[in-house]
Length: 204
Image (tube, rainbow, N blue to C red; front, side):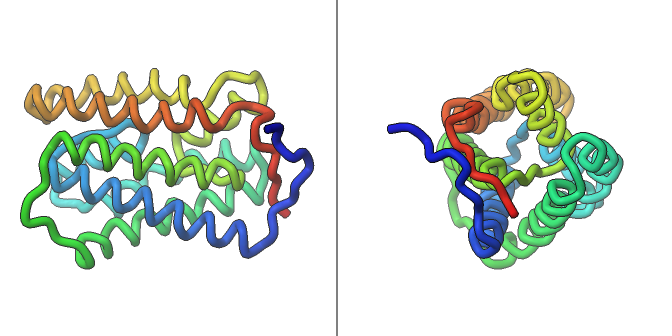
């Protein structure tokens, strides 16, 4: 089945994708935090910093993304930058609120790596398909895919593995191995579902 070209998203479609995409990512981050796992991108960096500093993930994630909005405006335009700013803000808030809404009596680390990665990958896919990033590496990955055809998922995987290498100083080996598994799942979901030309929806 071929993709329908030229489909234009309606405002409510963008809003729902923004809401559910950030909720999925936030829930995945909460699962990872509970299992003491790491992920890639600036979210992974923020998560690692939250393990070793008193600042919470949401605050760190929001702050370290601020410099990347310059690239978002220059390379992707104001609408993309504004949607990304809102998405980062929602993940920062939802990650805090989800920890209050959900509690785990038991969480198997393997399940956490797989399910948390699947949630984050699906949430990112929703956002990407509505031309919304999640800051930092996502902005760069989307720009490289649109400008040079470099697959966003594969590019992010390389960056994510580099960030996970830094996690060796924070996590035990079993947690690091499961974090790598989760990163592969996140980026595999994006890579096989967000190919150039496969989905041509655009926002207003």
